[in-house]
Image (cartoon, rainbow, N blue to C red; front, side, top):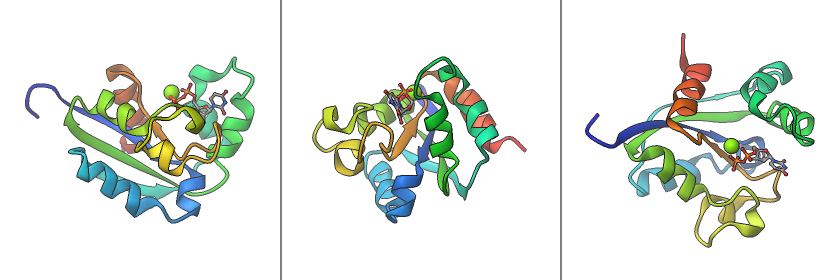
Length: 137
Ligand code: UDP
Ligand code: MG
């Protein structure tokens, strides 16, 4: 990878997989210079979701969030590109789709703050941890 090249983790959440948005979202990344290095469709257990989201364990929405992420198939994706972490966050838009900027994934596809279609790592450190969480053999 060249200078400023990074890898980040994206998740297409159950609400978006259920609406067959996997290809639309993958094309959106590719069309915006984020390459898909690897991806797989999986379903995780509630315990795995609790581990993945443990930074949020003190939040009031933690239990519902973990139930939700484990409620149906998700697509986990390793994205690569220039400033991939912040670029993916920009393409996703604000956490609450009602506040997401026009043209972002959450503006286009998000249903509500909990069913907001995509996850993206928020730092280099978390990107590494999150990629390992799903892709380390
Ligand atoms: N979330 C929620 N209610 C809230 C805040 C967050 O259900 O009031 C969910 C939402 O699905 C979000 C996830 O918890 O994507 C993780 O929250 P975070 O603040 O990390 O937002 P993100 O990084 O996904 O934009
Ligand atoms: Mg987050």
